[in-house]
Image (cartoon, rainbow, N blue to C red; front, top):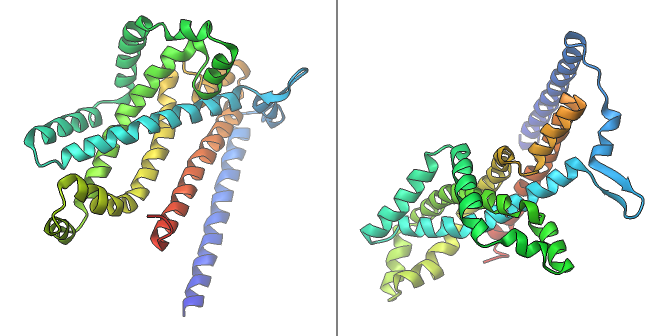
Length: 295
């Protein structure tokens, strides 16, 4: 019975795959026939990699944008995780003031459009606050290894202030959603676990650290993976402040070459590569946790 059911599902998947291929083929035909669009895929690889006479093959516009998106998403998530953890702990605190602070932050950030936040942080932080520290100028006169590290890990010195503003915006915005995930994960732990820990004389921080958070973390992995994917996708919005990430490079390239469909299909595939990799890694981690290999 089980084999027969799997066979039926396999046949259904095959039919759906064929229908999807037919739909894409028809869409391509309509673009070619209805819009009189002339496909030119052979030029796309040169916008991914280019050959430098000195350095050899180096990333070109689209891969440079992809690397910027990776850096932007990485630093945003690195900041958003502790922000979300603190917000989640505040929302589950026993003290009313802590709960009000956590609820205010989460409610405010979750109900504001990210585009508005991007502009607020860009014009306020990168124009008013960051110039006081002269970070870009300090990096520009720093040793070569510092400048190289800044370009590889963060951004070039002339784009550093805008990049920091974008990271802070995404971190605060995503941190609000992570805070809700943490709150839900903590509240999902059964009452008996809390009571047993209290019976052993544990203080609240010991209870959270030793009993609640390890169990809650396993339950939070799927929504946290989804939030990581959302961070990658939300990073496209900072293209409005000229952060040269993948969407920005795609728009610039499309405006210069008029290869509308080729450029955006390539950008879509690059985004899918990133998001699917995150989903796959999260799935592997969840399986290992379920088997008890990681505690």
